[in-house]
Amino acid sequence: MTKVIRKIAFLTQFGLTILIPTCLLFFLGYKLDQHFGTSYWCIILFFVGAIAGIWGVWKLVKKELSRDPKDIRNRDKVHTEQTQHDTEDTSDTN
Image (tube, helix red, strand yellow):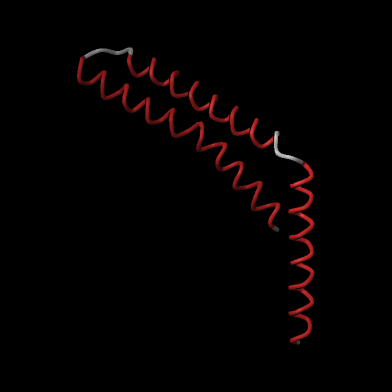
């Protein structure tokens, strides 16, 4: 179950890493266009935000891929042992 939660968390972080800078810079560009009476800041800052989001995702994925597989296996092994121990404890109480 923890693997599923970890993957969902990673996908959520992936989406938010792209969405937040893109939306914030789009909104900033929209406000600048309203203030100055222009029509190009919104588009420019939208693409800057999208590029920043993609760069953030690149760093996120690179960090995830550079993790030591041995550490991941050990962490999963410890979790499996804990789950088995918890299951034995609940079956003893019944």
